[in-house]
Image (cartoon, rainbow, N blue to C red; front, top):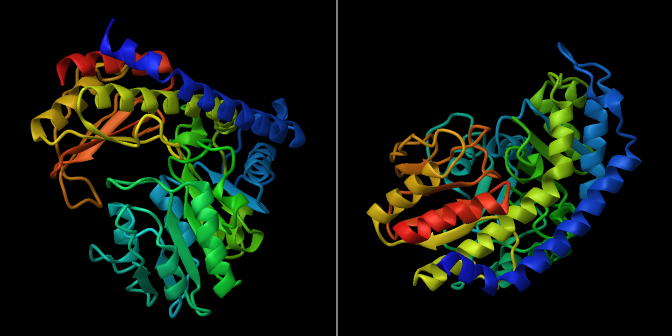
Length: 402
């Protein structure tokens, strides 16, 4: 029996837990489709200004219902998760205070804020004050320090749910809720914002159900279900989402404009498939954790750990192994399997990055992909997978060659 098959036998109980979460989330999405009266009329193309796009309105209502918010903005014009997050941060004005509750955000967002890079449009250059609350020694939210740092004048707190390129644990919905409870006790008017990338449908509840006023993510990650060719979403309080929409289009136009370019069918179908696809990716992450744990590597999360996103980190401790890992993932991909990934500079990152992504959608990390910065201790971040069978095939190759 191969090491992958042995690992598979060990994680069966964890897979069953994932299946239960997927079913509950599937039911939630199905009900939202039904309550939004999604029909064939929603698949019509809109161009130009995109006035009176019934499909777009249905799509955004489905998101609103699933995430239990007042409003949703779901658009192919949002080009990435960073773009969606940047739109949310754009509603801040000079003199406002922004506090990150989860330490420094991932590299590209640091340029949006202005702690790295030299953009003249960063938040700091626009006169917004910024502060970070470091995580505890064991990588958790520091509730005591949050209570000491947030003030009645804090305009927004932000929280990155997923780990980014770091070894810390991702933050659970329950932990997010506890942090926001503290924030609201100090300043009920403070905007609680969550970067939800990689986290959608990993748990039964979402951050907007535990106090988040605003939340953003990418459609080529979890909620696109592997079918969305582009786009991002913003959900939350009506007033805040409308402000974001005015930064996406123009003041006075907001969410009323925006053609969908005949993509509504894919965006709706991808969102409907997302709970199942996320479940496949989660099962793959658990299996990868078990395989590499059995091979003697440090892994985070551990196989039995509670999952709140689809990312599996593996500490390889070798540049050569990091390159080999990504190249094997590329070799076992359906697209560009003949391509050999090489480390390269990437916009927004200080280190060279190696990325394996033989994906149907460029940059889609709900499809099986792996990447990591070329820096010690050479951690690879594995995520995605549209089917557990594909993930198993990749792990068979990895376990025999790494």
